[in-house]
Length: 425
Ligand code: AMP
Ligand code: GLY
View 1 (cartoon, rainbow, N blue to C red):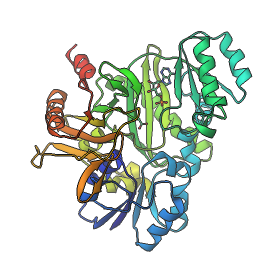
View 2 (cartoon, rainbow, N blue to C red; view 1 turned 30 degrees about the vertical axis):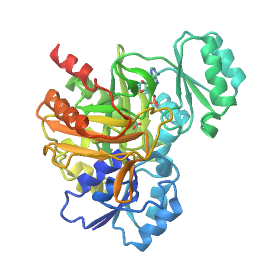
View 3 (cartoon, protein in one colour; view 1 turned 60 degrees about the vertical axis):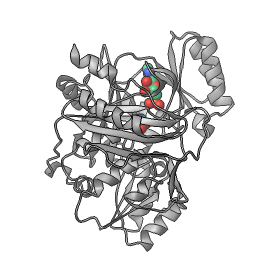
């Protein structure tokens, strides 16, 4: 079979490595892929993940049997709809279903209409009205741009002055472009955060192993928000009892809601959850695999990934038994010094050749220049280890992360620390 994977980060590398385990897979094309992915797939760096027409043209010309559209942008732009139109089987939601991530107003209204637990909120498309609402609010509050904003469109404000600045940034300065035409203002929730990715064909839902992201740049959850500096799975805060509550109050109602709205969701649905004192609530939905959650979840998957993706496309997921390996996984992100602010690129990378068999290196931001791998992004590599216990997984991931070299290499040194403390209680 010839496969096509749209995207070019660590998440896509993890997906590609897993897809390759299926003996029927002959060739995988990555659009655009990256320097490290080039060892596992044929990368077409000239076609970006948002070039929908070029992606469709490429799929037609290369006899693609199955396509996986991984990032949010092409999903929101209707890449799956267009591939389906020319008869190509795909994994990923169509454009209408992708609104669950692409529009926060859509997802908040959906949750309200169907009684799915989430933060209380109000929607505004007028800055003056937003400010008069905020005048009487109890702080902290959370202000979110409606549309996609690379994970940066969420501002937590501590007082009215802060809130005024946030509304100006999003609605007047248009820091996130048209994504900020509308805003959601919501109640600030507290509690441990849990990420749950789930396979769904619109009728059945199969949650994957839970995970925990580490979004802030610095140790001890300090510094700026990033795309994610490391992950662990499973998430120790997510007990069986909480998982059952989430299934009944969040996962199944969300599927039903999407069906009733005429946009059944097929693909990977990501639930960003907060375990609040009043029970689990939805912080956000994503219409795709999370990054870097995928880098710890997929290594624990025992069942063949392509088989699951085909069952999702064919709406036969309920007939499939999806199994997981016992144990835990940890992923440590190696970033370019300065990220998420400005950073230098083009640094030559030295990666040890012999690695323990339980360690995987997923390439996120690099490229080949004169045959050498050089850095080309903020998050450069994700070093994942899987082991019987989290402590060993962390040790093995950090051992390799320490050995990789490039100028300016930066990582957090406390990935999984909180999770380990929870386990020890
Ligand atoms: P998002 O980009 O939607 O994932 O939001 C980024 C981060 O902001 C989340 O991971 C949470 O830590 C935080 N956040 C978002 N909404 C809320 C909320 N209502 N209460 C508290 N924290 C929030
Ligand atoms: N790790 C969060 C995300 O993929 O949006």
